[in-house]
Amino acid sequence: MKKKILINQIARSIIILTFLVNLFSSNDKIAQTNGELPLRSEIAVEQTWNLEDIFKTPELWEADFKWAEKAIEKYKTFEGKLSNSAQDLLACIKFDDEVGIKISRLYLYASLAKDLDLGVAENQARYERISALASNLSAASSYIRPEILAIPEDKIWSFVKNEEGLKVYKHQFEDLLRTKAHTLTPKEEELMALAGPVRDVPETVFGMFNNADIQFPTVKDENGNDIKISHGRYGAAMYSTDRAYRERVYKGLYKPFEDYKNTLVALFNGNIKSAMFNAKARNYKSTREASLDPNNVPLEVYDNLVNTVGQNLEPLHRWGKLKKKILGI
Image: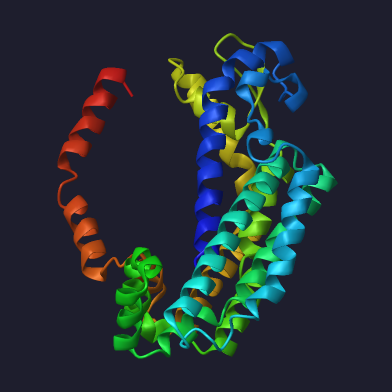
């Protein structure tokens, strides 16, 4: 029931992991590549991720992919039966969990393989295949939430009480019941799932631009060597003791974004419209509420955090002034 959330969490984890790997491995490669970005084949093995920890071979990935394809049909065998008995409900949820685990591993492998070199068509195709399959599986399983919510609440808790296997899903049922007002009909949920890849287009396009197509300039480092800027090298450069070098890298990193500001504004606008569509379709009052509600974060908590931080910025401002004074800037 939460495959999309799992995939988003994996994507965020990959971004963080990539940044950390680049941050701590950039400097020692610069001298060896005359300032140019090294190919993956030139990177020390211990500084690369090992995809065999996920799947030993691409063939094993394909085997699990075929299993996941067949899961689309198997989902149909549970539809309309979830209220029949606790055992039927448990069987469906356990199968959905199994699919979620498989899809997460398939997506992680494909995403990491794609990121090795965004110019490799085979890896890009694998990633597109699993993204499409994840969307189709979400559509195939979209009846689960509304069908469970159609069961009287006392009957759900009776199922949980009498079926040991359902007890581990107690919080999941509580969360599902909490968001009942924002769960649509089975057909509407299916349409929302099918629309997922379309709504993700702005983010997908920006990802390709930001990680593959964008061309960063070359600047002089602390020793006068030419260094081609990258996201990873930017992180490393920010730890340099040479302020002038840090400034060159900082300005160089953002120059290409300025050159494509109209395109980026259009993508940003598309992302906002996607969020507005989701909020309106699911009966939320705002995109902010739609973003916070899945994690059960009240708007008051968010507002209180923002206000509290805003009211206690004086120490940060004093620190900034002191730093400027010491650095003479």
